[in-house]
Every structure is written in structure tokens, then in C-alpha cells.
Length: 330
Image 1: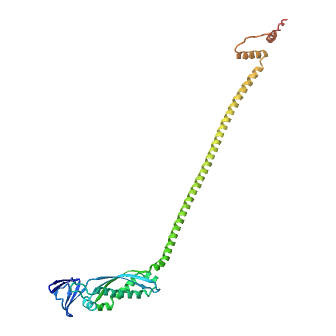
Image 2: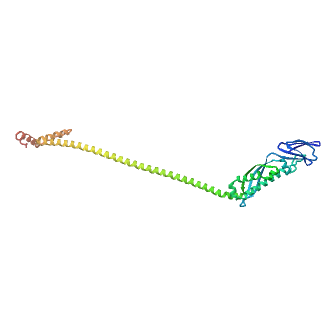
Image 3: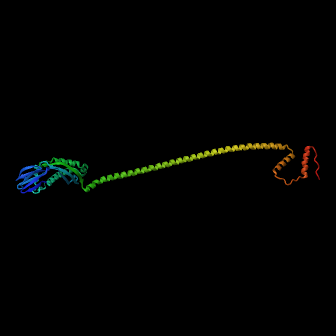
């Protein structure tokens, strides 16, 4: 906005380099340029201030697709005044000579013009496609349509306007359509999630089964090895028992042979002794018996010898000497 100072009947205008100033006196142009500073008399004077910097114009409007679904388009148009003289002729940029503000709303008028053109181009594009095709295509086709339409618009060039850049932020359906469109996707994602959960559970069950089978295999192998160990221990015990029995049998046989040899020797000795005794007289035998008997007695308290015993003993002794025994006492 231009800065205006008042000094008596005169006034001074000071403008920035980002605006173009056109000065008129009684309807005739008397000067134009950017960043001007000059004195003027307000009587019969008229001044127009046109911005020369790039201006951002956000836009949002509603339209319909080919299948009559509501769509919202949001974006931004960047414009500037390429020819301020032409633009001032088409749009009123006159300012208040007291305060330097625009007398009208020229920027709003340009915004309405650009937004209308953008909406017209977008409506033509969206009317050619159904809502699924629009959403699937995204913002690039619509952006290309708006750029080509606004940048090359003859009407804007005639007015001295230039579209520097166009951006399309989003093309979105209504909330109801969005929910309806998201439902199949949500269901598909839910099915994928359920499938992933099922596969994860199946994998867990398979792992548990494999672990159980492995444990069962280990138990079976352990039982088999235990059976083999028991069988081997039984075989070793039988082997040891057989060896012990064989050793005992050998020892028993050896003992039996030893006893048999001893008994045979003893029997042979006894046989020889009996044979010796067989040739001895009865009295000798009696004497030997008496000696053997006496050798086993510790003491003799009484000894009775009868005449019959002496007679018989003497008879035997005399008989062997060739004499008759004496008569027995009456």
C-alpha cells in the first residue's frame, strides 16, 4: 500500500518497488512506474496502484464426477500482473488519496476470475470420469488440465495477468463416498490380516507339532536305548552267571577229584591196614585194641580180671608157645 503524506495543500506519495503506480490528471496519464515518489495536488488527480509481486490464491470448490458423485478439489494458483497498464484498464486499482488504500476490491475480483476458470476446467475434467477413475488417477491429470488451461488462457493474457504456477493438493469424495470406497479396501486388508493371523497360528501349530514330534522321537530313542542297555545288562549278568557257574563247577570238580583221591588213598591205606590185621592172631588183636582203648582213656578207676579171662589169655599164649594151659582154679 502506498504511503501518502499531506503538507498544506500538497500531498506526497511514496510507493514500494513491488507495486506499479499510474498517475492521472483529469483522466489523462501523466506518469507511471514502480517505486515512484512524487508530490501532487489532490484536485483532479487519480492514482492507480497495481501489485507486481507473485500472489498466492488458495482455492477450494466442489464438483461432480461422471457418475454424479460429489468431489472436493483443493489447490493453489500463483499469479502476477504481467502488464499493469492493461490490468488497470480492466480492473479498478484506484487508491484513496488520503490513506493510500484501494477504493474497491480488485484483488478479490481477480481471485474470483481465476477460481472460476479453475473450477470450470476441473468440472470439465471430472465430468469425463467416474469417481473410482478419478481417485485412481490421482491429482496429476487434473493438475495438467488446470496448468494448460490457465497458463494459456487468452482472456488472462488480454487482461495483463499471468499464471505462474498451479498446484492441486487433493481431490477427495464426500465422507459417505469415502467410507463406501474404503469398505472394500478395509475388508481386503482385514482379510489379509486374518490370513496373516491364520498363517501365523498355523505356523505356530506346525512348530508345536514339530517340537512334540521331536520330543516324542527323543523319548522313543531314549526308551530304545534303555531297552538296549537293559538287554545288554541282562546279557552281561547271564554271562557273569554262566562264568561264575562254570568257575564253581570247575572248583567243585577239582574239590571232588581231590576228595576222591584222598578217599581212595585213605581207603587204600585202610585196606592195607586191614590186610595186616587179618594175619594177626586174635590175642594180638585184642592187645592192640586194648592199647588203642587205653590210649583214649584219661584214667582207670577199677580193673576187674576174671579167672576165665586169664585162663583164656594164657591158653592162647601157651598154645602159640606149644604148651598146655594150666587147669583153672576151682
